[in-house]
Image (cartoon, rainbow, N blue to C red; front, side, top):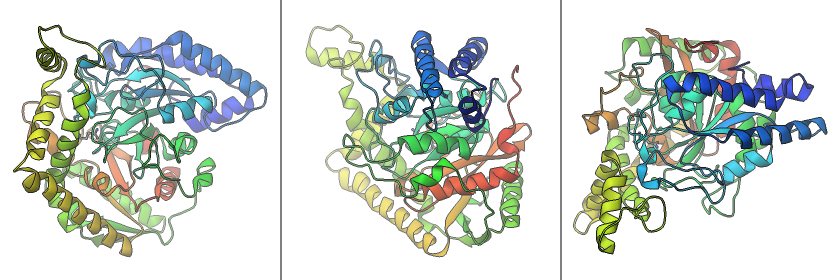
Length: 484
Ligand code: GLN
C-alpha cells in the first residue's frame, strides 16, 4: 500500500475499498521502518493522527466527499499544527508548541486530510540541501550519501519514500522545487498570495509561499484547491482563478501552447545528463503540440545577488523575534541584553547567523541605498523581464538545477556554492509568479527535474500542463530503491 498516489487513494477511499485508518497506519509504519535511515521526520502524534483518520472514515461512510478526505499528509516543521512542536529545524525554538494551526493546515483538516508527521528542514528554511537542520540532515532516498535538497528536505523525502502521498513545504527561493527535482517528485510554488502565509513561520515575507508536494500534478491539485484563496489573516492573499478546474485536471494535449526557453538558463555549466533529459522532455511536449521558442530574460544574472540581499534583509528583521523572551528556549544570564545575546548565540546555527548579519549590514545607514534599495530596483527589472517574455509565450521551461543531488558536505564549507544551487529557482519568487518542478528522468541513477514558470495566477494552467506531460510519461512514477 505504501507509496500510492493521492488520486488512486482518493478513488479507493470513495469506493470504500480503502480506509483512512489503514492508510495512516501504513504511513506511520513506513516512517517507523525507514526513518531511522532517512531522517525526514522531526515529530509525530500517532494517536491524534489515528483519531483524525477514524473521523475521516466516519465522514466517508456518511457519504461526505472532499478532494482530500482521509488522505495522509506531512507538514514541514515551520508550519503550525495546533499542539505540536514547530521547531523550524532550530534549537532556539526548543519547547515551543503551536498555539493555533496555519490557515493552510486548518483548511486541510477541515476537508478531512490527516497530518501524520512534521518534517525536517534547513534551519528556518535557509538552505538548499537540508544539511543546515539543527537536528541532522535528511537523506536522499535515491542515494544515502547524497543530500535530498532543501530547505523542504523532509517533506520531499516523505513523499518520495512513500510515507504520505501529499506534503506541504515552503518555498522562498526554491525550497520545494529544488528538493523535488533531486528526489523525483512534483512540487508547486504558487503565485505569491494564493496560499495564506498565516501560521507559516516567516523567513523573508515578500518571498515566502507555502508549496504543495506530491508524486504528480494531479495529486497536488487535490490539496491545492482545498487550501487556495483569500484569508483575512493574511492581507496579501488573492483568489485563485479557475480553481474549479482543479477537481478534475484537464488532460488534453498541448496543442498551440507557446513555451519559451530562456537563453540565460541553458548556458554552460549544465551537466550533460541533465541537459539531455531536459531536451527529451521538451521533445515530448513538442510531440504533444507545444510550440517552443527561445526567449531572453537579460537580468537573470543579477538574480542571485538580488535574492540574497533582499532575503537576508528580511531575515534579519523577521528573526529578531526569537529572543528568548517570547518563544522557545531561554538561556539564563545576569541582564536582559546578555540573556538575549546568549539565547540567540546558542540557539541559532551558523547559516542563520550569517544571514542576520548580512541583512543587518544591508539595511544599515549608509548601505541601505547601495544594497537594499538597489536590490529592490533589480527585482523590478527581473519582474519586467518576465512580463516581456509572457507577451510572446504562455509559459517558460527551464532546468531546476544544473546538476543532480550532490554528496553531503560538498557545499557546506562554501556558502556561495550553496547559494548558487538556487540560480534557476530564485527568479520566479522575486517576480511573485508561479512555478513548478516535475520529474523528467534519471541521470546516472539520480533524478532530474524540469521547471515550468507561468505568469501571475496561471497556477492551474501550470498544473494542467504538467498533468498533460505526466499523462504520456512515466518519470514521476519511478520510485527510489527502498524496501517495498
Ligand atoms: N535555498 C534558498 C535559500 O537558502 C531558498 C530557501 C527557501 O526557499 N526557503 O534561501
